[in-house]
Image 1 (cartoon, helix red, strand yellow):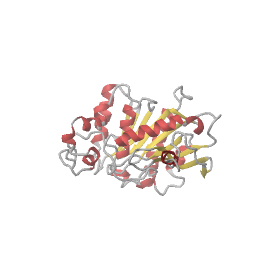
Image 2 (cartoon, rainbow, N blue to C red; image 1 turned 30 degrees about the vertical axis):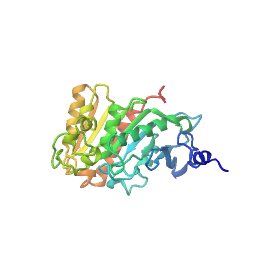
Image 3 (cartoon, helix red, strand yellow; image 1 turned 90 degrees about the vertical axis):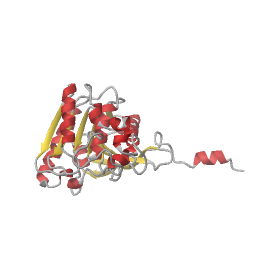
Image 4 (tube, rainbow, N blue to C red; image 1 turned 45 degrees about the vertical axis):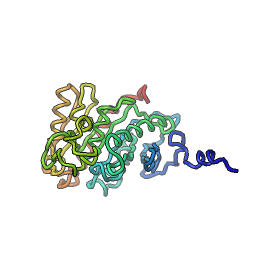
Length: 303
């Protein structure tokens, strides 16, 4: 008779920590991509995957390259891991291939959405992604000790939290496009007493009733002197996430002595809606220059 325990042990796919990496495909000249790489198994949930863009020849025996860990937006309840927003969707080459072509690998990671799990689940998933990338860094040719987290909207909020709290390895910079920084106070149309907002869905109840959990989900409450450099860029006409989120976070970071650059963009709504394409390209290029500067040192001892 077949041993049922042995069969049950044999059925699951190999754990992501030891599973073979998929073959890389050439997506642009000098850029290779690994699509749909599992990085975590969460009990009762779908497998979590990431896409990875790699510059040139990387891997065992090559000089490790720095990393951008990109976090997608979507109000914590929707979105695709490989989407930097509506204004970049028709770019060719796409934004991640451009970053890789500049010599920085890019990982776009899944995280559990608010319909699947409550905070801090999405932050835990991003920690797992960075830990997995560190574990497999020698095979991939990555130096995760030189990681910049980059996110937009809800992804910018999570990127901020990761930059302010993760330590092994600690990110060396954060690029935050129109991200939220405070879930505890009314802003614009946002009411922390409401149970129907995306913020309430993220926390599992009205933020005003969530107490410490709401503060733990607010980058504004977590700013500290040892924070890595932040680049905060926000549209001045943002009708979904008021620009004051980035302005207040910049002020708090400066008060702690942490390095921060704030850029507000006249005429820009959420997702850079209303901006000409050339202006969006300028914002992207400035963000990429920031990431290159933040990761400019040689291979770290933490990779």
